[in-house]
Image (cartoon, rainbow, N blue to C red; front, side, top):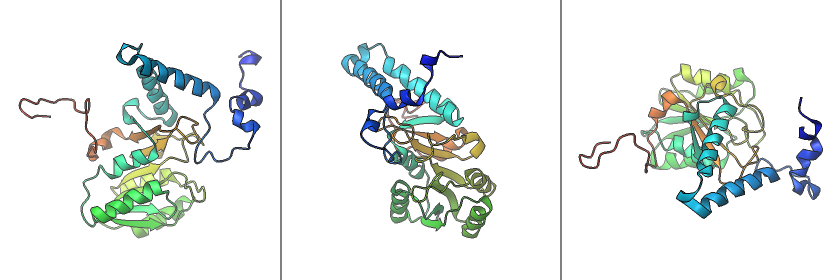
Length: 258
């Protein structure tokens, strides 16, 4: 048993968030507040790297690797299935921009999506000629599956929606949706912006193919941080939108092979 002074009591937790002395902070769905110990560690690691760069003790890199492992463990994924992004919007775009869309291809989403999902879909509708179909949300698996089944056609390729909607806070039956989509030979993408840190997320149990989330909301991390999960066996379905140093396993500029 831990000594009493080591236990996280409510007063100790509140001490880490001094803003609570002035306000009752409820807008975690937009920005979570970083606790003081996390701010101190984050700034120290960043400062060490910025001051010394390649002459540093590589604490920044070690912390990045450690964080990737912790994120993977948090959502029950493999470390190699996690990529860092700036936010959930980045992750959503990694998936949506990574498909070889054909005119007339269809995506099923909901009528309670954030702009981070709606705007990329509308953009793809304009430039790629895809069709975006929206269904009303429900927390009831039977209701959602019936609505999805009625919307399904032979041109449907992807189901893309929030795990928890930002409009009403409806928690969608993600496991049932993923199972239905898999049987229908569809890929699944979930926006976890309002989920990660708010309640336990088990990606393996959900069974989705892609998941995008961020660090600056319910995880109370720094702004400009997020992560993307791609199921290992489904990553080949994506065409990378950004390719740079370290992206290719093999690259030979003499004969042009990659």
